[in-house]
Image 1 (cartoon, chains in turn red, purple):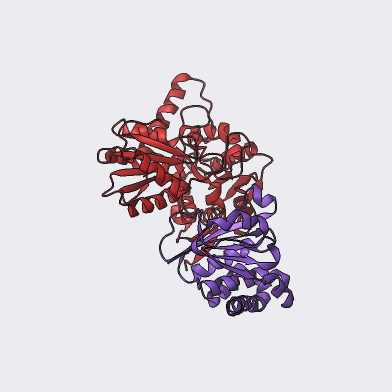
Image 2 (tube, rainbow over the protein chains, first blue to last red; image 1 turned 45 degrees about the horizontal axis):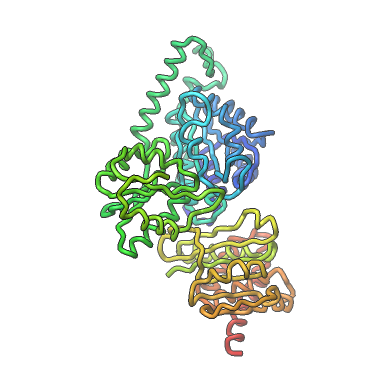
Length: 360
Length: 183
């Protein structure tokens, strides 16, 4: 029976991960993500998995690397400064092509920053963060329901592509409560056979499976890179996800992800009430980015406004997608401040009739 | 119909749980709900607040800065939120905890002696449920029945024996609003 329950985003994500067949969680507490770790520490050991509180985020992500090598479902979760600490090992996991789920409940930076919500880690999440040419699939939920839904999806995508999947949330999504329904999901039906590469003991009838990221011969290292790039192209082709709100007759588009898209949705309502034909495009995947739909929309709207809780990060990808066809403006708040629907509306009014290109 | 409510006070007064119970009751009635707590530095300084939205339609933004109703349980929160109640909205406050009374003319102000009543009911912890009763008398956002059902889900089993005292508190809170209006 799938009943509605009222849960915090952090808890809904944790519960979904356990229901998705999580076998190992490795993490280190940090606000505003700690409820997630706390929930898993309480529930996972009772329900067939292992919880380890590591001595640091660096240790935690290296445990994820080890756990992922078994082909079982493993994850970690943290918040911004902790995610920074994990970057080296995420590069290793991506190179070794191991499936795992990562969660960053973003807080305001840079530095130790604030514990309030932010989207300041977009570049780090989407463009790499660690060294080398690798990509992490990045999912951006905007509700407690999606905190759960994207956890199942993330686990599946990680297994399918043998790639780390990151859920990029923020402090507010982690802390707020909304109703959530957990779907029917039997992990057994989603099991992917990883026996060809996973290191879980060698049977007599095959060679050793080896997980390594060290390839000293240049030709071999280039081959590894080409394989990775081929995989990323497949992901770009098949896994773009986005939501559109009121775009059909829109002549102006707001682009926003995560919590900001909720506020922007309200701004769309306010703008529509004043007769402005404003729509909203919300990327649900940040890598792969919904480039094509943005390019299509750019052919028929007069302008776009990107709203983020940072100094202007996703706006660069929107401008790449739009490729100079229309002006793309930016409105951002930082330091843990959430933009208000009215201030976004004011900003829309300011640029609605302006034709020249604006810089952030 | 949409209700946008801020509940604010000191940590320990039951601010967050009052909001959670209200949100849960809304969900029990099949409505869209959201509950957004303060969790930042202000909470660590002792004050806490939560925003509750209960709506028939999908809730776009859970983050708002003006409210149909403010429920205020301490002086710092009064200073912070008095001006953010919408015109013709409601401002409820706990009589014993507020030294400087609100002065807004374009909202309806309700002074609820919830603290004294909780002492009369011999359980100071249910002050928040008295306030919740008053909220529901001012605006029937959800029924008492839904609140009681919500309490069964919000409270762990070991505290279910406290539901009857919570029920009396809710009812007393409702009565108080009537008594104050007729007085």
